Length: 157
Figure 1 (cartoon, one colour):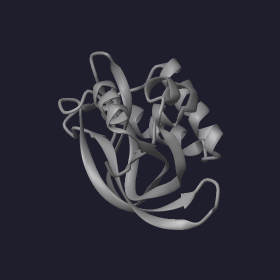
Figure 2 (cartoon, rainbow, N blue to C red):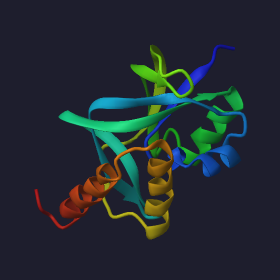
Figure 3 (cartoon, one colour):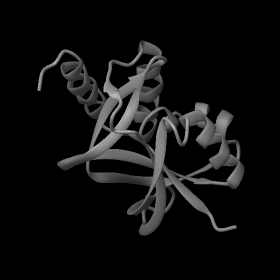
Figure 4 (cartoon, helix red, strand yellow):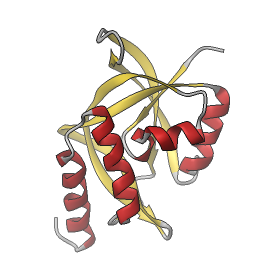
């Protein structure tokens, strides 16, 4: 089986949580999801991060090497295919150990776009923020995603 590369932009940036869910997953590197915007949308159970195309925006991501079992665990966690769907992309990945940049085929979970904007729980936000700090990502990306989504829940455009 070929390696599969998964990109995380939300709670799966949290290494401790990811290791519990996907024990054989390994951090490969980081990248930027260009021309996508980070936002919170959701369901009755709460609001969670997703990405949607937006010219000029970008989202920092961590890249994980995953096994078939890891991917099945991620499918369950992400509510695939009813809550999130999967999209295949090719991204330049900066290696975590070497710093070398290599283009790799990756997959990402994206929430179905018709879901309503929402505001995340404190716990979910904290879990995501821990991942942002671990990878050295700018926490303002997360804060801006919350402000953007909150404004849309209040009917502002």
